[in-house]
Amino acid sequence: MSRLIVGPFNRVEGDLEVRLDVADGRVASAEVVSPMYRGFEQMLVGRPAMDALVVVPRICGICSVSQSVAAARALAAAAGVTPPPNGVHTTNLMLGTENAADHLSHFYLFFMPDFTRPAYAARPWFAEAERRFAALAGVQARKALAARQRWFELLGTLGGKWPHTQSIQPGGSSRAIEAAERLRLLARVREFRAFLEQELVGAPLEELLALHDEAALERWRAAAPGRGDLRLWLDIAADLGLATLGPGPGRLLGYGGFVQPDGGHAFPPGVWEDGRIVPLDLATITEDATHAWLADAPEGALHPSVGLTRPDADKPGGYTWNKAPRLAGRVVETGALARQLLAGQPLVTDFVARHGCGVAARVLARLVELARLPGLMEQALAAIVPREPFHVATRLPDEAEGCGLTEAARGALGHWLRLERGRIASWQIVAPTSWNFSPRDAAGVPGALEAALVGAPVSAGETTPVAVQHVVRSFDPCMVCTVH
Image (tube, rainbow, N blue to C red; front, side, top):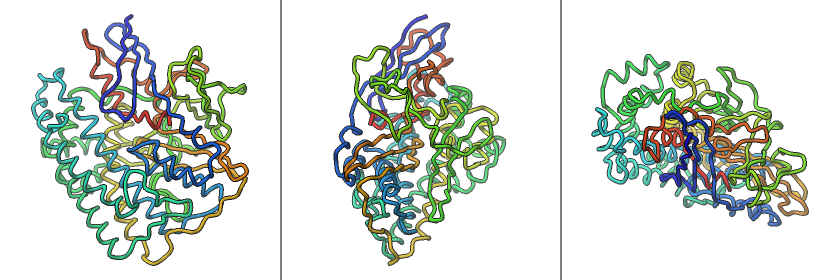
């Protein structure tokens, strides 16, 4: 048995370290370490409630809209206010813009450059992967960056700026969309759709979304070898066996994405386990701080509505600043894979039934979701009624509690707040990477990534094993959100 410490990881938002015990050329056990403390939850205590809409988006420069939406929904719940339909659709457009940009960045800038490492130089696809995806030099990565820059102009119209827009409010969006602006926004969505169709998929998005199982996907791949970056990734994934690498707990959580004015969702909430979908019981969420550098509560793991976040840097047994979220005491995974399984997306569902929830399934789900987002955003734009209200005024009570849930690109994001005497008395956040990168809990059960890394191959002499990198990046880590 040997010990390997991998980190800090590059191409990751925030600081991340992974400690591996290696035996017989494979990972025997893993500890995921978030070595950075930030303390946003403490910053909020004692402030006027609406200050949260200025402070909370600064948690992250990648998913600041998602943080804003979760905070606004928690405040709306405390105030008992419901945004009008235009406010709901505008919020969906902003979330869709940010989530699509995250998926694009993950694929082209974070995940694919690992296949241009020298370890793969002998593979038949290496030269083409290097030409397309080499960090800072790949032709497709450069095109994706340009498309991402144009795409974010949507948020300039919808929210004034990005990141840290201030237009998302508990009562909806403070920025009304006029009829002429709606047409300009639609043109920008279709421009992004064209990029996806020409460069990523190499075909109309609907052609990909019409593939209902893995056999159809294989026929589609074989019909036009090399056309589009998705087909090249499928070639690489098949060659390296990424479908069975890094299996998660097989239990996935979603809070629901693209909320509709009638309360429905385009991506429904729930829990997926072994092909079954069961309702989500928010009351069973707890956070365990046993192995975090955070003080334990006398009661043990706590629900976020009564949670504590008190630094204890010298705590025995601690190895990370991340708590261990659990659902009914069990480890869950969250992200695009959860959303597509809960939505019953046929291709992703069939792929998971055949191979499980490994690296390839996570990336496939993310790309399928990316292909679905332009259509959902076109529908949201069509549903906006210019000159109808986008926002209702909100008056917060002095004493109240609230919970705000949303789906960031990386998965389920929740904020829980309590107001006393008109000020914030408690604000607890459980981010997607908190779920996926959690440490062991009081029972010693590893978190989702810690378990997924077990069995990953480590070649002789490797100090940063490529298989470990693929597993870690398949979860798309965001450590600044994790430690808030």
